[in-house]
Image 1: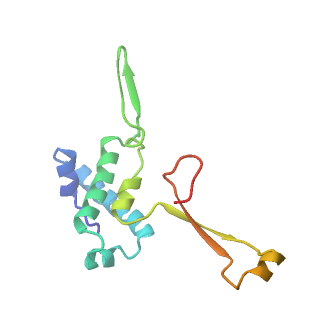
Image 2: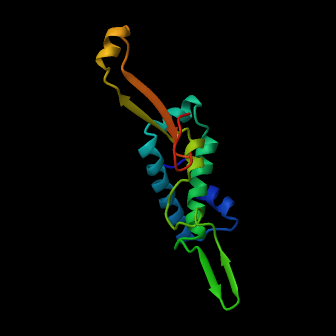
Length: 150
């Protein structure tokens, strides 16, 4: 069972849900819970331990469903004669998904680790005491096109 309820979605959506929408929202909340637990299998333990606030999980689940309810077909723009408007492509995907900042609220890092193996040259073998030949570097996926070490 999802942390968020149809009432949480209704409050964020700003209107009353009818019976069919309530059933759909309940199913979507279960789906978003599956998506979260696929990445955070111990979510319940983290909430119980206080590592992740239950209110944050409720907000993230409800907002993901609200985005889908507001734009189920993923329309980005619409034009009718001289009138046109455009929605943010980030918020109008038409898919049930969590945004990067929502994952970070849940404690999921967007960092990647790179482990490089360096074979010592004969000169390094003779001149340096035995040490680890593994170097660690960390990059974040939010960096520009050319990633740089932190």
